[in-house]
Image (cartoon, rainbow, N blue to C red):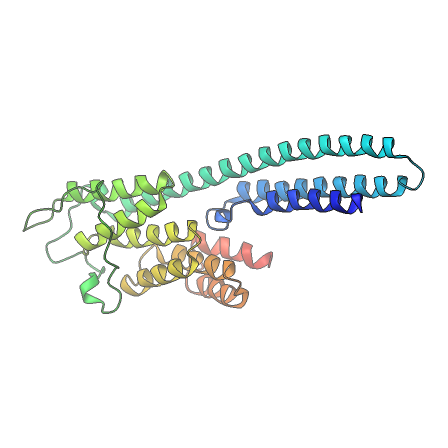
Length: 288
């Protein structure tokens, strides 16, 4: 009975620590991160097997050993569990660092794409009639953003007339800074305020994308799917669509709908075969 309780305590500690691993790596992954995460899982499995083997050995020795020996083994087991917990903490920290690196890499890529697309970051102010090929929220019924919560960090809206591209860029950057700092509620509020203030901005599609990513990071997978679909409907042909589909597939998978996730990945590969997101989609299909 004592061994049964010890086994239960040890298993509970390992399972709790293992499931504490964040799920956000499903969104921001690259080859190095995937390899490191796989290594982490293998190390956790080895630790679990070691603990199970030790418990089994103690159970076998109980038949021939006295209470003193049992207590000695219990103390040794406590020491081993403490050591294993330390190893798990190290692995969790490594996981956090990998996720931060993935997030920084993706934000850097987003900035480069915006410069190539000629957004306000490239000193190209939006035309008074809107950006060519990018519809406004008002032009697409049913996909207007939700009313945002007040965001003190946003710059004041421009005066009537032509929008100020400098204020627009600063508002976007402030919202993105919230995401970089992992302040996901603040990022959602700030980006929602941005798309409401600048619905015709060439950065509006990126704002929707980061709203969806922030919702994913908060495990609001249904909200992430809805937001990314808003992006796809409102901005057909936009460069963010392949990544939006990848985010939708990841959200569907986290909701337990593996079939829908697979179909979304297949749609991404079929419609955007040359995108980086298609490469990631193929990798995910290969391991499912």
